[in-house]
Amino acid sequence: MEQLSGTLYDHPVWYDLVFGSDWKAEFDFLSACFREFARGKVKSLFEPACGTGRLLYRFAKAGYKVAGLDLNPFAVDFCNHRLQKHQFPETVFVGDMANFTLSKPVDAAFNTINSFRHLQTERQARGHLRSMAAAVRPGGLYLLGLHLTPTEGDDICDEESWSSRRGNLAATSHLKTFGLDLDDRIERCRMEVNVYTPTKSVRIIDELVFRTYTADQMRLLLKSQKQWEVAATFDFSYNVRLPVEVDAETQDVVYVLRRTAEPVKRA
Image (cartoon, rainbow, N blue to C red):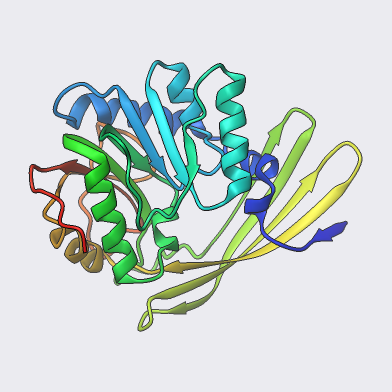
């Protein structure tokens, strides 16, 4: 098997295969949250760290006006081409989710697959939440999904594997934590992806670095951001009828953040 250097993010077709196969549950959950928790109708959406736009173009097909940003230009090009292919405007741009502006606030935004934890410092995290507050109108929503580090309980998940298939492409993926420093709040993960095409098999081994959050650390961060209130919390079962209480044992959580009327003060 040929081993490629670099990161999976530079191969958007394969990235989309690995992370795009289970979109339906997220799509239905997000749609339900827009109806349930937003004040006013949700017609426009924004996704920071949108990657290949696995959900964005589907929301566009459902009648929403969509936009997004990502740091990776390969992902942005892929996403814009996908939107154009389905006859929608190319509204995704290269940008830093810790510091960006939109020309006009949207009704709702979402970031559900742990991308928030790529922000390595408290300053970046606060900058992201301020930028998002400027990007979402009062009464609108930001659905933020991430893995928390539990401080109680024995059933801690530090490894997962899954398979994906689309047409003549298939992939197996394995993600495992190999370093966890709770003092410096750094989690290091090794991700191995094996991709199988009709003509070759390739392997990509990547290292992902995440900032860690306990339930209390996330609570304090959100409490410090007066532009947001927590409207509800859910786990990754994506059942809008089954909210959860975030506690010391919680690992997977989606925060439904609602924009308050508090003005944004830029740092």
